[in-house]
Length: 86
Image (cartoon, rainbow, N blue to C red; front, side, top):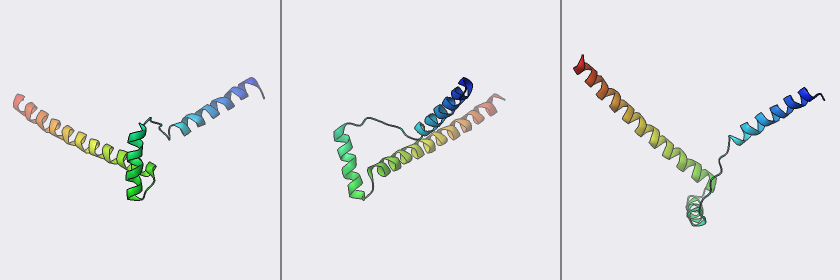
């Protein structure tokens, strides 16, 4: 294989590795915290990963809804201000 072809192949492999690694996030959780979450997952009868993913999804939804409300409020207040200034 030529040097250029070898570089292109390595580049394609690097792209694949980056794409695969983008699908996961690794975080460090203290053991006591982890045990609490494991117990909660057992109580719900679901895998720990599912409980954590659902929890993160809910936090993000809440944040986005709150952020959207703030944006709407600011747009309304700015519109009122611009009307007064006009």
